[in-house]
Length: 71
Image 1 (cartoon, helix red, strand yellow):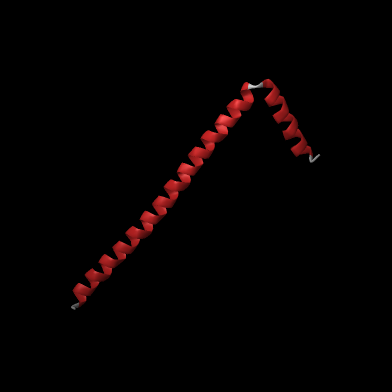
Image 2 (cartoon, one colour):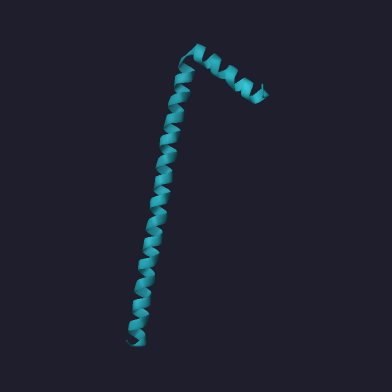
């Protein structure tokens, strides 16, 4: 194998390795983004439910106050 062929092989392997790493990072990033989106949607839904019911909202505020005051 000449030096030029070896350089090409090293370059090709390096590109393959980088592609795999970037793909793995991108997949992980997309998964975390999806998890964040789903969690934000669930949170917004819970918030709307609490806001829509005065009794539930009062109970929520009471529980929140207890947690904040440490009682």
